[in-house]
Length: 284
Image (cartoon, rainbow, N blue to C red):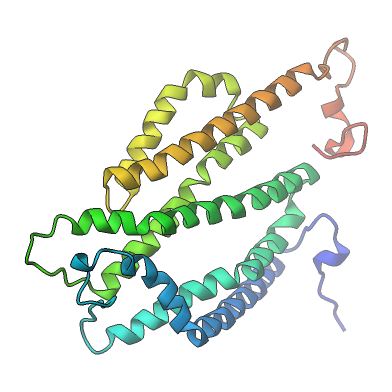
């Protein structure tokens, strides 16, 4: 009887290649199963979800909508089916995110050092509220961008907006705002890793802010001034917060004693200790 090695009995997470492939397969199957269950939940609650997504369009003036209701146009016999499937799949990915994020973390974590794990915890703890905050801002300002775009429709003309085009616009807005709010977090991570110093950030501040406005103008689907400012201004504020964090981190780092101070040429430095460990037992 042969016993397959597992990571539970191997604290270093070292495995043969075939075991890594098998574990990756198992993790992917569990993640896909979670997404399928979440998609089923999305199908079951499709009607209230669609009303929630359609609400920004319903807030437009009546002259910009088709008829007196919130009517959108469906082209073709199968578009309604694929619309429901697409929305349910998006909902499934969001609902099952704790499952597939855990599977990803469980596969990667054994190969990380303790310090890297702490950074990952901090990254996940900050990235989720930042993405939700960006997506919420996009949802709140969605009707403003739609109103500006539909304001160019000539008088006496009715805009036939298809369900697919509206959904694509709404999802693009939610994703772009959510992902953009993550950019300052990467600045903090790069600073903690020693790749990006506060001095370099301060030197390039004007260029970075200008780049954020250019990115907002290009990335937003409507590319109207209101939506651009709604994305750029909060991102600049978050960038300033990231710069302050980088400043505090670099000052604390500079105040620490130099581990190489007072060492002779023949004396081993702390980084030369066996197994890559510091004197307090923490891995580097």
